[in-house]
Length: 416
Image 1 (cartoon, rainbow, N blue to C red):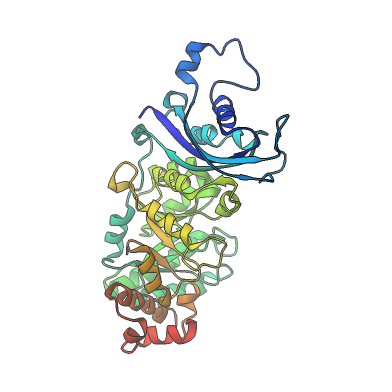
Image 2: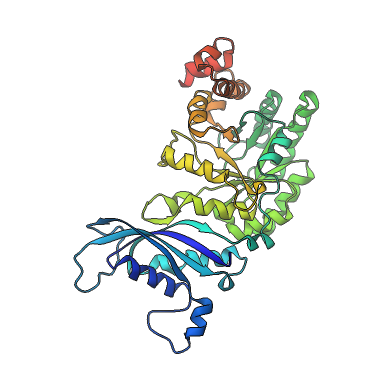
């Protein structure tokens, strides 16, 4: 494929054809007026083209302010899905330039009263520069030793404010319980009161001690989000102390930052999408997760947050299910899939419904309060989630399984 195809939902007071042609011109060879140097031969080589137009419903009012209405308009706004094909030679294998082309100034065009980037189809030549996940699903399972069920993890709670020694005690209990995965919260990076280097040292000491006793090494995603040079120093600290995972806030470091980290990191990259709501919450503007997650995966995210079913945020279950399926759908090869991360209001009792809706165990299921808030302690909280998923996969009613598993029973009594 010698083109990049971008799919958009658009709304306009013009015809869909006119609006699509304006996008084509603005994002490739043209501008608001004809130019003498925009020759026919140049346009044949470099002008984008309209690949398809699918009309949808109409609206009486514009979705966004500042939209232009053509003379003689009926005051009606038409909606549709348009696909625009951009010549690969205009862009090259560069995600920053993909975004400049597919999500650039067109969001400001006054002829559009709504626009959302729905999807991207990229040529395989992007694999010349971008390596995709180093570990992905199979590698993360190998590192954690977890097969046949989701990898179960938690977030350090409280999110922020714990001293290094308080953190040490929590990690000791969690790692000793055999928990699969621990992560920092996205707001806990490298604060002066508890520097990341000190936290990494304390946490990894406890993880290694627990591994010596249990034979299982808990994966810890340390939040190394920072400017590029400090971020790479944080990565070195994690590797030096025997860590096998780092976490970054993708929207803070950018796709170029993520791709650079991928080239340097010999460990798993846990991709957090915080700030995602700014791009996605309003349905008539921004970007869909389908497009976003492809760029995250190309740049090297091994794990990618997708929210959770029945979550505490605005996102619908249908959107979460779609996000999981997107992460598990190969772009170019099976190895470029990413492990979907379910979080937000997760606990043992959510497992049967989650499994019924998603029909996969290729998940990283993270619970904060559902583990730390368990009356038997975080270790019991972890075991309750494992037991909930055992019941879900085996098709055993949750309450029946709980009769022989006190951790699950207490979780139901507390959270259910």
